[in-house]
Image (cartoon, rainbow, N blue to C red; front, side):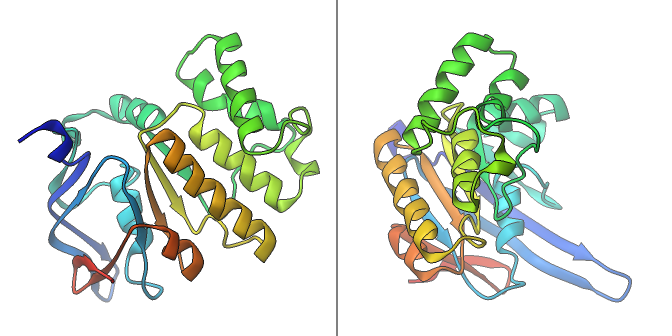
Length: 230
């Protein structure tokens, strides 16, 4: 079996429950899920089925109760917290419904943050950040504070920040949930173009049928298992 046929990420026998005083809510039950390089995947379905939980497990923000998650064959459960944080910063890009940008800082400063955390050369990361902001259509807004940008522009800054380290996986949780139709369409197209250009894997949680339709694969969660939604 060649490397191209091996999954980029693999969830093996993963289970996850949420515990409350009155009950245990099972999200995943001994499930298996493989993700391949360059794939575009939409995680769809009704609210409360665990879509964001699945995304957080893939992104190592959360940990499974049992089972293992592999990246290129490496068992991520063996990573300590510091190594796992470094893995997320270098390999995974995150975009959320709320942009979580740092107020009082410019668009450029916000996009530079992942590189500075990784102790990259400041001039190099500044150049990368400028290039990415130009790519998302914000070449004239580099020095503007993020609170002075429109909602659509802020989400583009968040997307540029997620991509500045050239991650192999982009995870997006309702990335256009707070945008109007015009800005939503623009971000949808941009995500699709960046997948095509960079060959990165894209996994989105969305209720937006248009965005889901742009992904090549749809999955949902049913009875604790990840299944095809097509």
